[in-house]
Length: 213
Image (cartoon, rainbow, N blue to C red):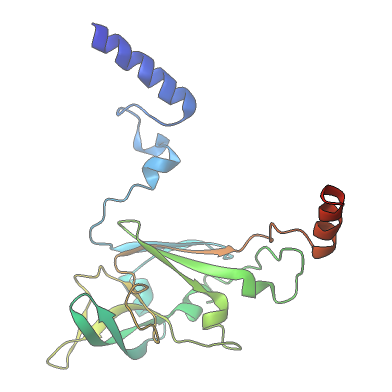
């Protein structure tokens, strides 16, 4: 009885704070933190959203309908240097296609080249994630051929769909380590860096002079 009472009080307190929900909550009523759990496992689709005109969900057939690009990459893993040839969709084409369309993001205090403040967060089913900036893949800047890959070349030379990596994974040519080669993709989200929290220099100088005359 004493335990039951304590549990009820704790549950009420956590509910008020927004840190707990009863197990009987229906899926459609699940709280945001429940939607963002990190179960891991094989991904069969991913969500493309954030600063795009048409947020959508993509699976293997969607990726296959887009132009295919191949890249051969070498990167360090825990077991040593690994070289693979991957096939997939250019990340730039994926986020800037007719179906999606990159949206102008938060320009901060200076709107010039606002897209250079944007970045892409690629997240896996286990919540592992990595960031690629728009400047890295924009054709007028670094133009790096970053892929959302769905197939690779096997040892016998045949092309096979990804299995252990989920249906799609991120491939970042030029990276010496494979930390950004996110597998089991479940989210690709575009965001903008917020305006700098630092004050302009002249304001800082005036405040400094006022505090330390």
